[in-house]
Length: 187
Ligand code: 5GP
Image (tube, rainbow, N blue to C red; front, side, top):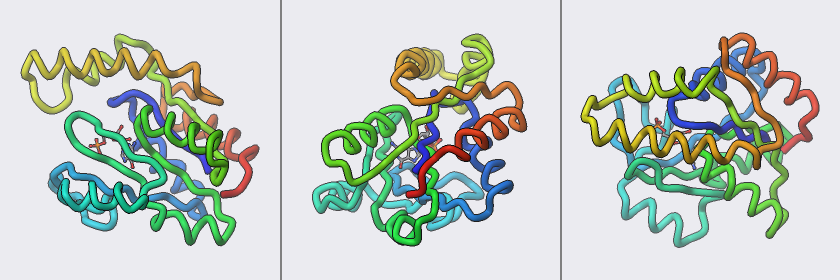
């Protein structure tokens, strides 16, 4: 499997979408989340939207490959969303936050039932990321400060990844990811 991660606001979702267009055979996991649905999002397509209780029950039952709390909401990769693809020998792409990527790496090392290539998507510069974070969602100064703080912590994790991909343009980033994918074992 290939884990695509990086700081919030870096555009990893857009990069993964473009990668899927180039490789329709890639399996993409659908995460569960407690975050409220945004306009245009479809349950079971973008995410499985669940309440906190349901999510924590799933944690309890060991239904997640990994899960993390991000900005007050819970996000996790259900085994059920990747099991079929893994059994079929497809390459699975996970687009998750940096804590989730670290959990996958731990699981790989400690349990050994997954094999993952970890890719960190880099912004063109800290200033570019800061700009994205400042103009996302709420303009409340406290939450902007929190976003920036989280962004710095996320950037500090980059060295733990197997590869780094610069997202200067989506096309260039996808081509770099493509080359990594060519060397990624299945499942
Ligand atoms: P958003 O709320 O903007 O859709 O996602 C917020 C963050 O959660 C993003 O960094 C996204 O990559 C991450 N995320 C989405 N699904 C998962 C998941 O299953 N596990 C983890 N750890 N992070 C996730």
